[in-house]
Length: 308
Image 1 (cartoon, rainbow, N blue to C red):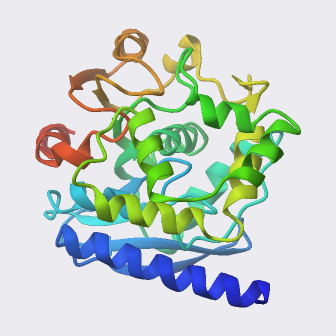
Image 2: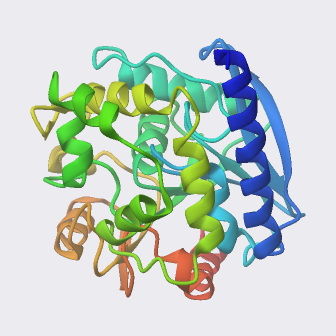
C-alpha cells in the first residue's frame, strides 16, 4: 500500500467517523475548508446555525467535531468550530518553540479573515484558550469576550497529562509514538486520564481513534509537545504567569471540571484573582465537561454571552 493510498483511506475513515458524531448529536454542520496562508495549507471549520458568529477553538490534540454536543445547544449563533493544525482534516503545521506563538496567532487570524469574522466573542478549550489569548494580545480588540472551558493550557503552574509530557523528552517521545497503536481501549484510557467518563461516548471515542490513525498524527503530536514542553515542563515562551494574566483585559468566564487532568479548580481560582474581568464556575467533569453536561455548559455560556 502506498503512502497516498493509506492517507486517502484514513481520511475517508475519519470523515465517516466525524459524520457519525454530527448525526448522533443532530448537528447539521457543514465541513468548510479555508486556505490558511501562514499554514501553507487548508483548515477544516465545521459551520452551522444562524445568528451572531461564534468561533469555537478546540484544544491541541482534538478534532473540531468534539464540540458537537455543545454545538447542539448553541444553535442561536452561527458556530464555527475550528481545529488546530494536524487534527481532523486540517493540514499539518511545522512547529518550533521559537516561533510557536507567532504560528498560533497567524493561524487563527488567517482563518477569521477567510471567514470574514470580525471582533466578537469566542468559546475555547485547553490550548485553544491559550492560542485565542495570544490572539487577543497581538490583535487588541479582536477578542471581545471569551468563554474558556476546561483548564487553559499552561495558565499558572498547570501542565499536560503525563503521557503528553513524556512525548516531549528526546528519544523517549519518538520511542513511545513508535509503540503507539490507536485503539478504542487506548482512547477510552485517555478520556479517563483527562477526567471524563467514556461511557456513552462511542462516537466520540471512534472519531478520536480515526484521527489518531492519520499517517502523520504521531509525529505531529511529538512536534507539538516538544514545542511547548521541555523535559516535561512548559517552556517559558508559552507559560502564562500571574503577571500575564493581569493583561487579559477582555471579559472571561472560566468553566472548569472538578476532575480536570490538566489542572485543578484551585488553579482556576487563583487565575481569576489576577484577571481584571473574569469569573469561575466549577462543575462536575474533567477536561471536556460538555461531553456529558452540554446543557449546563451551554447555560453558563449563554448567560455570559448575553451579558458580554
